Amino acid sequence: MSNAVLVTGSAGFIGFHTAQRLLARGETVIGLDNLNAYYDPALKQARLDQLLAHPNYRHHTLDLADREGVAALFATEKPARIVHLGAQAGVRYSLEAPETYVDSNVVGFLSILEGARATGCQHLVYASTSSAYGANGKLPFAVHDGANHPLTLYAATKLANEAMAHSYAHLFNIPTTGLRFFTVYGPWGRPDMALFKFTRAILKNEPIDVYGEGRMSRDFTYVDDIVTGIIAALDQPARINPDWDAQHPDPATSGVAPWRMLNLGAGQPVPLMRYIEVLESKLGRKATLNLMPMQDGDVVNTEADVSDTLDAIGYAPSTPVEEGVGHFVDWYCNFYREN
Image (cartoon, rainbow, N blue to C red; front, side, top):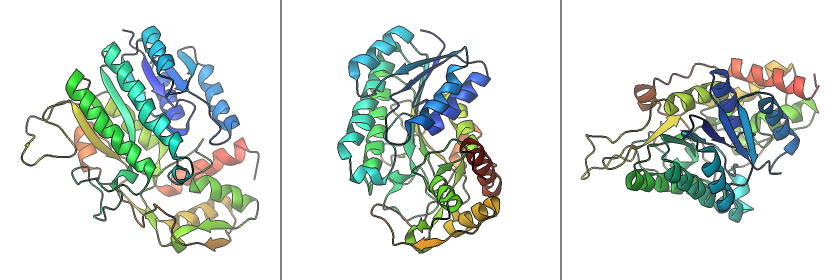
């Protein structure tokens, strides 16, 4: 086994930033991404080009659902640790292309689990989502609360990942940590997410669609804080919880497997209208608002309880939206040559 880290989705938003951070601290990174056309492949390629310039980065253009291809990658590279961030993203697209989500997020995750099993992985860290909380209306969302009522297929596939990871952790003693990401934003972000769409529209003097008539709030989390949490989790493998009670089972830990769930959010929800105000300030332009009803599968508010994440891995997010949105605007205007 090598000491390399496999990062899936390495040409994606969070995967790119994670790979960069790992390379910066001297790790060898094996990247996997299929560079699909869910959004602009040129943006993915631009991220990947930066990684390819680093001598300690090796890339495999490969689909997660290609079981034989992923198995061959594990047999050749033998990564010691895995950060699994590759998935079909997007909550609403799952209403249009459900098969894509099952292929990538369920079949693809099985490919990763089988690779981890074959190589004796030291720790598998994987992305789940705050969407897993679904119809749970208790705020803040805590990993010790149930997450049994997903509102979209995307969320259902991520809950399936959590259950699959537990079974492999139990059967094959593979330490696994699932991270429920809250709304992540920042430079090199995804074009299908609100901040990117709002910025593009405002700069083109086009109206922005504001769902829920703007009466929503989100636990917007800056990407650098997310990556800090990912790597802190990677460095501290999950363990069996010796205090776990089978009569009162804790949904976030396990008494029979080195398995855990953690929230990665800011812990500070921001009203959507405040988020837009910050963006207007950074762009120096006012937005024309097209107030829309709630979308299917959406929720009004999200808020992460990150107290367990602080206790487990020392996670302490510190980037306010005023700073984070400013960094995104600077990147966007430079990358797209707009001002």
